[in-house]
Image (cartoon, rainbow, N blue to C red; front, side, top):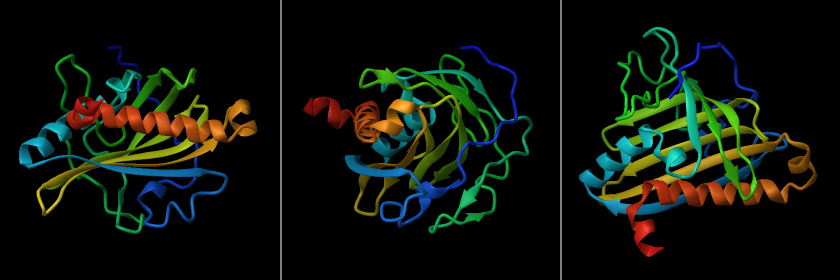
Length: 216
């Protein structure tokens, strides 16, 4: 892994936190295409804990066929990201203080303010981009984070990844997103945006869920 110097970019879209809005599917940000999927990936605390560790170690992207590089944590311990309430309204920081954690190969775990470079192909088309971790959720029964595009992506928008250990003991994995076409090809053929998103969702599920791998 190569660590670059942190550059204080801002995200390239206005509706920061929009993936947390309950009415995302009905009222997405302007010119964006919304998407949402949820899957039951097992049950019990062990399944939730294991999946949470994988999710925060970038498994959805890396095991989903996308390369993560140039991981640049936010400078200093004071940056804590943006927090959101149930309606997607910004509230207090998502975390007041965070010790940096690393996976086995030395890559920093997902943390608020981290910027990463993603490279790969989806459906035969480029899926490169610079992304920012907008917020992180670490609760006893809920783990997740929000990623927003910074630059160089064929689409502009946001993804929300959430794992929930529900009261009935089931563990669910949910991904929500909105994508505004940026590349000329995607602006001309918006169906490609939907196809790209469907494939990404299936990759994320396969990366996080052993049940999916078994069924395949």
